[in-house]
Image (cartoon, rainbow, N blue to C red; front, top):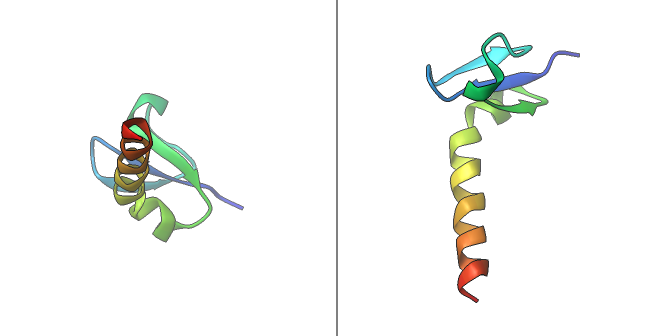
Length: 54
């Protein structure tokens, strides 16, 4: 089963990590999950920042 990656430079979803690993977020099980990677990262960062403030 293929894995999907979000390329932070091109803002495209890639199947099976075609670009340099330093440009990618993932792996994700579906293309849809990979496409939502930037929003997911933002939510996690906000949660971590809130935890740091507490």
